[in-house]
Length: 265
Image 1 (tube, rainbow, N blue to C red):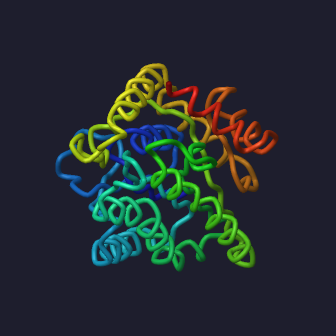
Image 2 (image 1 turned 60 degrees about the vertical axis):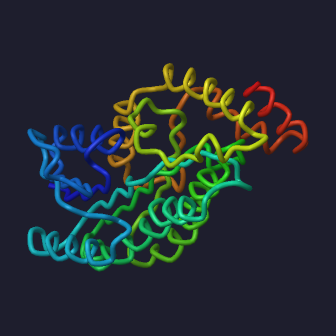
């Protein structure tokens, strides 16, 4: 039975993945900052705050005592962030990057010794198709998610001698509760961007109402785990979501930005 640890398992994509993998016979442990708030789950949920070194090390000790090793690490914990790049608060920027990038990599570093004990270790980092392009008012979030791809490429080469596969999973729009905890620039701080920002939010909400369910991402991830080798990157989403990064690479940059701006008008 494969041993799976997933960060951010109390809601959204993480919850869907934990439920499905448990049903498929994996030995799954999810994590959350406040696991006591979540009960009646089909899998155990332990405390882990990816921005706290002490919390990560306590989770490592707990997993080591329970399993002694680890087969699959799924780095799913993350936080949304919206606001103009120029007017974003430094505390929001730091929190977003500490959660989406630095915390993810520290979790990977601390759990690596356990993964090395597996004969088929796997790491899946949940990125975003949005990380493949700059988006208006989501620049800091897109930059954080985009950096995961580059880090994943480097990590995959560095961990190849240990037989550990690394994959960056890139979902498109997913219908989750991320908006409830999303970091966001206050309306009074938007200044001259207020009108276009509020219009962008309307378009984004319409997109989220039609977004794919988190369960679709879970199904795709479970299929990936059945492969002998993980792909370096794998996109999940609509045809348009998958096509957009290709259009970006094949068209003049100014034209592509015109298309993006037109989409949000």
